[in-house]
Length: 332
Image 1 (cartoon, rainbow, N blue to C red):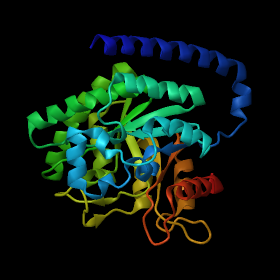
Image 2 (cartoon, rainbow, N blue to C red):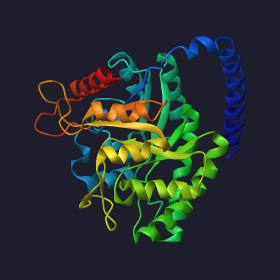
Image 3 (cartoon, helix red, strand yellow):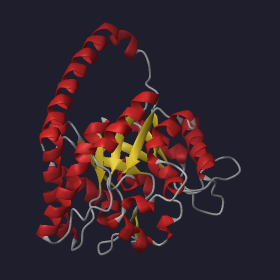
Image 4 (cartoon, rainbow, N blue to C red):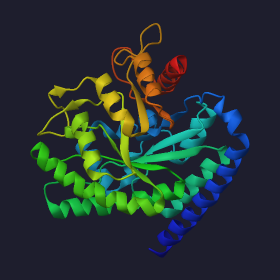
């Protein structure tokens, strides 16, 4: 824990000194900055390259979960080394910022993240956040399992701090009535926010299955927790929700209304895409409408390209990433 405490102190000192430099720059250049409209920034989600990283290992999900728990490197059966992701994002796709998924380096230790940070610095790529999956349910009905899940999330806070991220994305998965689920996740999310605060990290919840995909429930949960370092990661899709199941809910919330409700709390936006028509338009999501909603909200962080690659007109990962990026740039 001594290393983590040192990291906490050095990160706090860096942020303080950076804030002082930024303030002096703004005082000298406020007239110029005030006259410019800031262009929306784009980043690349590591999930866009999940086939290049996982290969076919996730086709058998139960076996994939078993490998992840017992031999995490075994799930990495693709051609891309996760340490090379920052340079690929920059040199192949032209992104200056990236978002990570923890299952691509699930069993790695501190030295790995120091090396990943060095790789980012070498190509001048900014690390924005880590998306955390497969670490238990923060809203588990069992008090002991909730505490265990919070404990399992802690290492990702320290890893995110090493990388210089601003956030850690978590899931608000639970079971029970809507009210019970809210009580469960409030307890865990409050604890995580308190752990993240000294590291200058935000905790962000994605609309990602179960009640978390019902935006009114999610917004009400955030309001009740009332922590400044708690917000949302807004996904263009993922609005199927259920009060009883995490995935494959039978109820679907309107995605455009849902994004509009979640944007005031957004610290990240995930521009999900599946397939494209002959004009380069995404066949599931109206990107023009989504960009208008984002710009109306005065969101200032990155929009992340997250290419899923599903559907009749899906592309390979490389072409799909470029198609999504081009579509965003068309409307920004």
